[in-house]
Image (cartoon, rainbow, N blue to C red; front, side):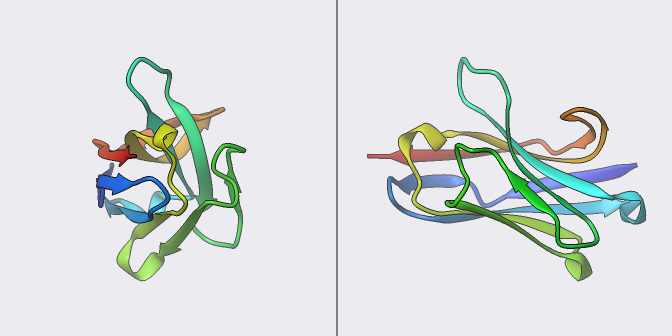
Length: 119
């Protein structure tokens, strides 16, 4: 099993920045891909971006491309989501997930962390 814990959410002003962390524990040697998702009130869960546990691959949704950056520190079993130039529409609960079992369906999920962007 893999456990994922997100942190770093909170209240941020529009145009500002914040960084989320996703710390993995348990069978971390089995992790090969980690993604960030978000879900705003009344909306479906949305893919934000993903990365591989080993290597340089990252991908992003068009809505965040150029503003968000995913990075990782394997020694700390942590994946980060750096969020810049935040917009009101970025307000959501952000989740990290590990190891896809099918298209955008992941085996392990964190509990989520709230990011609220204010004007």
